[in-house]
Image (tube, rainbow, N blue to C red; front, side):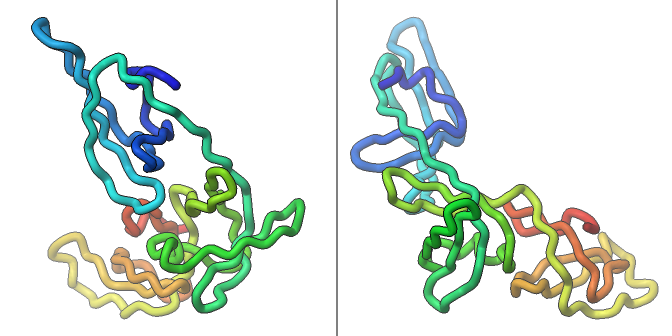
Length: 185
């Protein structure tokens, strides 16, 4: 148990049966009343982002999540299968829990699996991943009025906007937080 004022972004805690990750913290102290701590939190199980308020001095139960490096193997149709490289233990995670993450996963990639008391919570992706362009339209000469971007379909099925000079078959870096083009690989 720690004082709520000691929480920092990326800390995890349990409150009323929910498991939360701290995204942001704001402390508000006035002369006439107790300190109010406002937390912007993400429910780790559902992904919902909400705000919570506590009085200063409130005790919160912090927890540690287990992180294991695992290799993505394949898609069974309803689940994604990951394997621990050292013990060869395989874990299946429902595709419904990984809607966003599966857009960036291709075979043989190593990712971090987050779990709490043997409950698998999800996958932690790197900030950027390298993906190959499978389909894009050719650039049209003189079409440079604005930022000159075109659509590209990547090997995982993700569609992103890329600059005109990027061609089919090239490998590009894609940001995993907002699925945008970040440069050539």
